[in-house]
Length: 522
Ligand code: NG6
Ligand code: CA
Image (cartoon, rainbow, N blue to C red; front, side, top):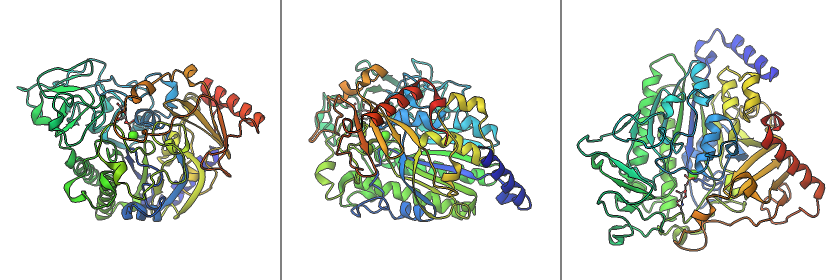
């Protein structure tokens, strides 16, 4: 820690003659949805090409051993924003579209911390961290939300694309809402007279499972029921363009000021429903999922072009990652399994979204800051959990000891910026069935997850009736131990061969669950 502080003080001193470079960088996090390890071509198998993301990686540091905090969205986002492992909050599970805000206003967040350090802060895109305090009235101010936990600006998709309400939220207000056509939302049962997927399958572009057979919007039935707010409905096909446009407008508006900015940019691609813009349909040759990935690449390219056009590329740290691993069938019969060709989004890793297998959380992670980060590849163990402390350090606002004692986030700025290759020694991740822990070359998947309150989402997910095979591979009831160095595909369970290691990791996991200070500071 001390070292980092000294490092930054020296950098500030050395650069004090050059105000542009001396300033902490702008920070852009491009956070994608359900993008697997191998969906980006510089991590991949060559079947799906993402040239603009590859170029970003070539301009910076590409991490091969980096993990989201969880194999699903809400918990991963929770951990980026709060710096706390999601299992510390009982509600940090996949939220419905009318769930209350998960993060306490006034608590430490990456946005509030960077704001206190002098940053202007914004979140654009998918939120899925709840809004309001329960019983949200979508026709008046929807709050508390991001603006109450440290963001200065917000433009959101409230939950997921497959959940109602299918509207954008601009600050506290539903965008384009006609007050004479009030928006109503329910997760308890049908409301209003808009048709549902169950009633009118003939209106659907593609079939849906029971869970996704609620209100039909734009030819797709969603989870939950919505009625009213017709003028405010989104069009899925223009969502990426809409978010990217809003992000560029935000960056342009901030470029005119002297204040650094932080933009948490959350694309909904390539989550279901996969409805990419017309110009991408058929372009990947790998079905809608591949086409959606090309749209992600296009969005990344537009953002980088904007930074270059504004002359702030070298003043901006750009991070690219995903909230969890890949999934094929996730509620809709959109043909992606049939159309995927030779492309394997997992790379060499087992499992996928929802699971504690490696592909559940091991995702692409790229850090690019031309002129500061030397291009290269790092095999250091990294976790999104560390972004709060790491970005705090990069913003020249290291977290104090009191905050660090209460959260799991730790400063790994030296590894992020390429000054060392240390990363973490220990990292906890989770899937819907429970917790796992990485420690050096080992990975331990804990047994009996129910004891940690994960008795879970599994029951809902089982109802997924669309297509085969299953959405991903469930974990068996017992514990697992793998040596990822020799067995990255998690094929050989060493639990019985290495009982001391397993006991040590079970114990370490228990201690971290009790107290963040037992987690990894190195
Ligand atoms: C699940 C949905 C799935 C997806 C997921 C959230 C069912 C059967 N499945 O509950 O389709 O919406 O939630 O994905 O309802 S995430 O990436 O936002 O975590
Ligand atoms: Ca996701």
